[in-house]
Structure formats: C-alpha cells, structure tokens
Image: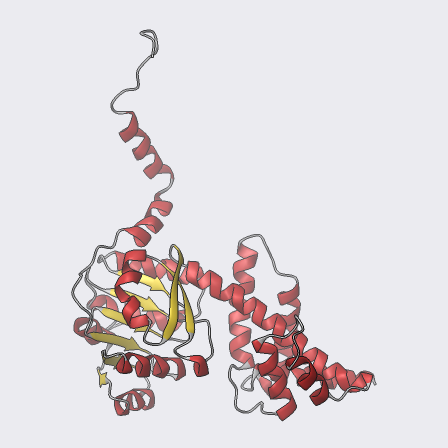
Amino acid sequence: MSASTPQRSSMWRPRFRNCWELMFPLMLKEEFCMISWTGSNKPIEKVGLVGCGRMGKCMLKGMQEGGFSVVAYDKFPAAAQSAKEMGAEIVETPAELAKACSVIIMSLPGPAQLDEVICGEGGLMEGLTSDHVVVDTSTVSPDTTRTNAQRVAEVGAAYLDCPILGRPSAAGKWLLPTGGNEDALKKVEPVLLTFASKAVFVGGPGSGNALKLLNQMMFTCINAISSEVMAICDHVGIDKAVFYNAVASSSAGTVSGLFKEVGRCIVDEAYESPAFTVDLLIKDTKLALQMAKDAKAPSVIAGTVQMYNEIASANGLGGQDTAALYKVFDKHYQELG
C-alpha cells in the first residue's frame, strides 16, 4: 500500500456492523433464533410431550421403548388418559411440563393450539429457561414457526420446527426435516431417533415447515391424479382393480408408495379407515399454497387440485381417506356419460 493510500479507520468494522444492525434488525433476530442457543449438556432422561393424538402416541411409544421417561400434557381428558395408560406421567398444564423436562416435543393441530400451549395461561413460557429445547412436529406455516422461535428465544430457549414425513403406520421410519438451531438438534437427536429413522437439518427457523409443505403439495397432486385415473378406468373399458394391480406390480416410473396406498384404498372401498383425511389434506395444501404465493411462486397445479379437495369436503367426504377424491371424479364422469 502506498503512503498516499488512505488507511481505513480502526472504527470502520464496528461502524459497518452497527449500520447492518440498523438496516436488518429482523434478519439478525432470525439468526439469533438459529445460532445463539448454547443450552445445557446434561443427559436427557425425561421428555415432555404436548399432544397425545395419533402421532403423539406413536412418539410416546417410541420414546418409552428408547429408554426415556415421558411426561405428557393434553387438554382433552380422553387423550391424556390414553397416554397415562401407556405409562406416561400426566401434568395439568404445559408450564408444569416445562418445569419437569428440558426437552419438549409438541404434536398439535395448528397455530391456535400452539399459541395456547406456548403463551396461554399456564403455558410453556411460564416454565422455559435457556436449557430448554422445544421441538414442534406440527404441520404449520414457516411464519408461525419464526414467531414461536422468537418467543422462546426471549428466555434463551431453542425452538426446532421438525415436521414428520411419514404415515403413523411408518413410525420408526419417519424422516424429520428440521429447521432452527443445529446444536439444539444434535442435543435432542437421540430422542427423535426413537421414533424416526433420520432427522435432517435443513436451515433456519421455518425451513423444516417449508420442506414439509412442499411435500404436501406433491401429495395433493399425486393423490388427485391417482384418484382421477382410477375413475376414468371404467369409462375406457379397463377394470380399475386390473389397472391397479398391473401398474402397482410393475417397474413403471409412475409407481409410488402413495399411488399404491390410494389405489388399494379405492379398489377396496376402504375410505372409512383413513390414513390421512381429506380435510387434513385441505389444511396442509392451503398452507402450502399460501407459502408459495407469498414467495411470488404461486402453484398452478396444486391450486387447481385444491378445488377438487374442497368439493369432496363439501360433499361430506372430509373425514374420509384422501382416496375418497375418487368419488368426486367418478360422479362427474357418470354425469357426463
């Protein structure tokens, strides 16, 4: 450097950093949620579970078989009693659960229930500390997770969005795309792997949710085309059972696990024992469509399919398996014929 070249002030870097903080405070807040947690390294012996429904009970069973004691909370007495009969210790409020366990796993229907559990009277916030890791397996929007991550970060706790890729029947083989703090994930991974085969870190808060919702967009489209094609079969002279058995047993690129499940359900007319209901698919698809719209990448195909999902629900099929979409297409083609 020549003598005439002006040297940077020793204050240049701090001034730049302060400028950055002034311009991008929200970005720094999200980074804080993702990288700042340095909680306890104490061994995990007891795990808290909020939500003892179908998926929650799968997790409860796995954690117990993995050697962890489980403290559970569910606002519905029947669900709490069922968890108690499985061997869980039951508490009356989420706050009690937070005071008993440093690792808390939530399995809830949506944002309203999460708000109540986290911030309501007797909620988790009354018991959380910097040693806590809160794991949310619910299917919600990335924005919901970012809000909740900031809430628990106020007391130094970590928050992971950890939605489930897999059916209840596949518990133990689930994959968990996880957003939040990678160190927190490493801490709770031994717990997660009692009911899942893998937990994959995918980025900051909300990243796990985003990946799950993209998956649900694929789900809704595969479910719809499988149902539609099965409804077309009879109109082109192919028995739908013959079509299903031929394709499902082939090495065709169109064969998928979901096609096999949906097609079998249609052939057997087993709509009343749902693996996943039409109404739940509508909820997930709505979240996915909104996420895509907000990102200025609106979905064309999934958006069209959602209309048929809603027609199915409006015709009383909301509580049936997603394969019941077949009935909508079948009725339509019969009316045309």
